Amino acid sequence: MTVVAYALAVVLNLFILYIGVRYLLKPYPAAAGYGVPATHDRAYLEIKGLRDAVFGIVGLVLLIFVGTRAEAWFMLAVALAPLGDCLIVLRHGGTKAVAFGVHFATAVVVLVSAGLLFAL
Image 1 (cartoon, helix red, strand yellow):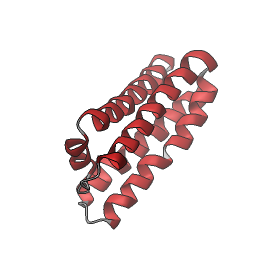
Image 2 (image 1 turned 30 degrees about the vertical axis):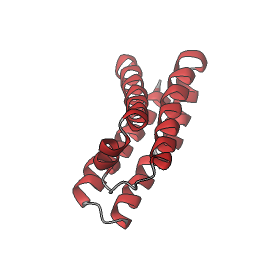
Image 3 (image 1 turned 180 degrees about the horizontal axis):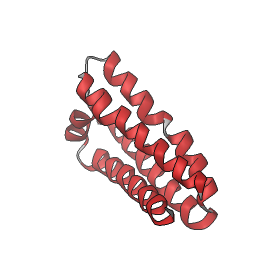
Image 4 (image 1 turned 135 degrees about the vertical axis):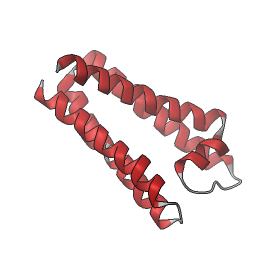
């Protein structure tokens, strides 16, 4: 279970770091994958990218230098972001498939990761 808990935490942190970098480099395609249309102002998309990248880096730093307990609490708190994303997509005309299939599902996986880390 330790290997699974660590592997899932690392994969999730690297994935959110990737999403952040994608928003910084290709903000409009990244926004389309998010589930709502993008504005013409790149600044807001780049802000989202920077914040997502920082989430990924902080998660990795916690896991490497502090330990599984801190990472578990971090994952628990970070699960609020994809839950909020789910609501944003629904409120702004995005599809239920993206809202639940991407964002809500991500929140569930992040919560599973937190649970595994707490169990260690």
